[in-house]
Image (cartoon, rainbow, N blue to C red; front, top):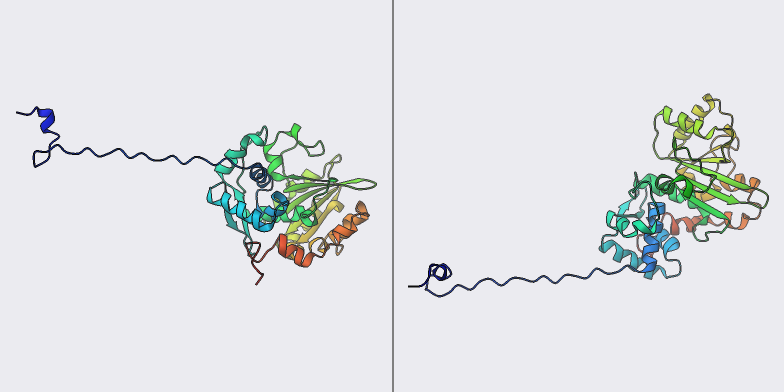
Length: 312
């Protein structure tokens, strides 16, 4: 008689059952990212939101549009970045994912906050567009951009000394322009939708410090009623430096770029270009006067996602 252990392993015909083979799964080797891909992910972290065209300009300008687009698609497939829509436009944009942030975490240096997600895709894309303005194709050595992401994430000692250490309010970006006679430091505020009056009053007092290093505050508003509402609040606040506040509309900026007129304030009806030229940009007229129509549709507000498709 067969031992009990052997009987347990026999089938109905008295034959030994075949034990199922163990399946061995081939472990797919993780692809190491190229240096240019890591640099691009760091750039995307800085700006939070970039269109496909801006990704090429800021991250892969040495390559063709087609080549950079293929790299971006590969990063999408591998989960390092994700794609989203900007409300009110046809623009498809990119942001970093948790996987992508993990890949570059230690490339960024010491961070006091481990942050990478935008609070609002639409808001943050307008912040990127407004801050870059005509600089996108030709970033200059005498121009410096500090984004809201950097101010939130870095320790104060890492940031330039002209960035306030106060965190009572953080603008949507800072731009430093080096002029022939003097420098200009600009803070940016993006208002897609109207918020509480208290929020704007606090923002106004944040800038209304006697030793504030900020020379100008550019407000980009979703519509004229928002711009007027905020400006009226600033008037009632009796600020010491109300003349530093300039209000522009998103629709004007989308059509005209830096030729968009101020809708209220001391320089009402003056364009961004004229305001800056009067202060520090006497030798920058050529770039500031760039033909916006066509340029913006290509870089900031493209009608198609892929760079090789013809516009419809």
